[in-house]
Amino acid sequence: MAINSDIVSIRQGASAFDETNVLNETGHKNMLHLIHLRWLAVGGQIATILVATWGFGIQLPLFNMLAVMVCLIAFNIGSHLRWHEERVVSNRELFLAMLVDIASLTAQLYFTGGINNPFVFLFLLQVILSAVLLRAESTWLVVAITTLCLAFLSIVNKPLVWPLNSTYKLADLYATGLVICFVLNAALLVIFITRIGRNLRAGDAALASLRQRAAEEEHIVRMGLLASGAAHELGTPLATMSVVLGDWKRMPQFSKDPAMLEEIEEIEGQLLRCKSIVSGILLSAGETRGESSSKTSLNEFFESLVEEWESSRPAQYFEYTNSIDEEFTVAFDSTVKQMVFNVLDNALEVSPNWLRFEVSKNQEQLFLTVADQGPGFRADILEQVGTPYNSSKGRPGGGLGLFLVMNVARTLGGTLTVNNRKEGGAEVVIALPLNAMILQENKSP
Image (cartoon, rainbow, N blue to C red; front, side, top):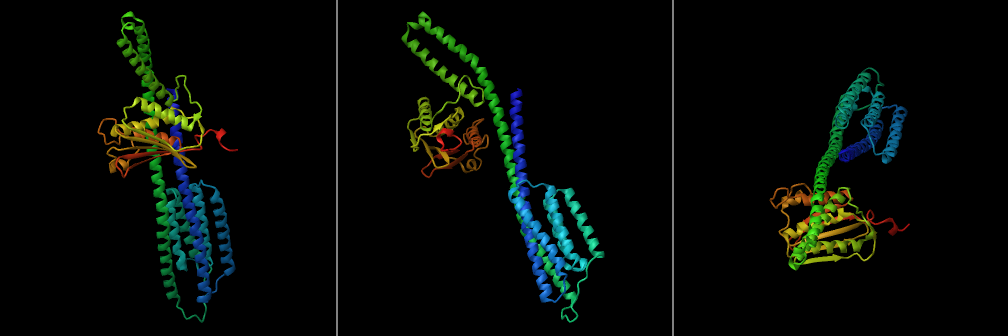
């Protein structure tokens, strides 16, 4: 039981690790959005300085404003270089980045009239972004800091020097500035809040998918433990039956009866098959019965797999195609075989008259395709392929076959694709990474 609890703990740890990666990826994308927004801020400041200086003749402290802008540009370049390589972004780092933006805005407003500058309402943009990007305590801290900045600018600032011969009224320019500030705030909020919201929704969807996967894997662990326990329990009666059948074969009343001997040998054959199934269950659970994975060629493995499956199933017409010409040395365990058997068995159940199994590959993946001439999958079943108990057969416990196959394929780094054929019937394609299965001796140095 200690081993079983360790397995569950490892899976829980891996799930937590995956969730952390998703959160980090979301934070990284949000940091990139802030960097893009900062470049827009730099462009907006340059445009505002040019319009105010050349268009309205307002005297601005250009040296001080350009110094602030150069510092902001240097910070943004450094941020871009750092976060291009670093993928983990914490709430604290997002908060510090926003503080730099607030400090830059405060400095520019200080040199351009303080709270009398209509662009002072850009502080609202920082507050709204913090509410979306940061934790609650950090957001309230941003509210407090921006409030202090506004209070500071209302007391301490450098008044704008208005040209004496100006034909523009100050009130009209202030109203125009308010309109421009509103348009900027509205446009930037729509653009970036939409992007950030999409990013957060994608992160939430990824987290939900990971949690669903963790629940499915826990379900598989429990099924594996149940199967392993059942296999252990079956071992003793199977061994007893084998001994009894051996004794029967030596008994005179049976050894002299050819018909009875034939039936006993048939039972022994089925008993050996039961033992093989039990061994496969234990091997899949990581508890071998003196058997282990052995090196074989890719084509030889599938030839043996097809021969074993076909000899024990009542398929009327079974078509096997292998389009792989090269010979690769592989070391498959029984998991891959059981996965293919599961798909073939499901196809045989709905299409006993015709079945096709095709093995092919490209440069990166191995493709195992099973096609049948059954009724195919309903649309609602196709939408939820790979979820447990998702079956159209209507029997208790149904729908676990493809669920197990999908999780085994995913564990091996592959994928499962299910669709309906135009000719009728269904097609299941298992794609597995080729490089992960070929032994190193095949790969060029």
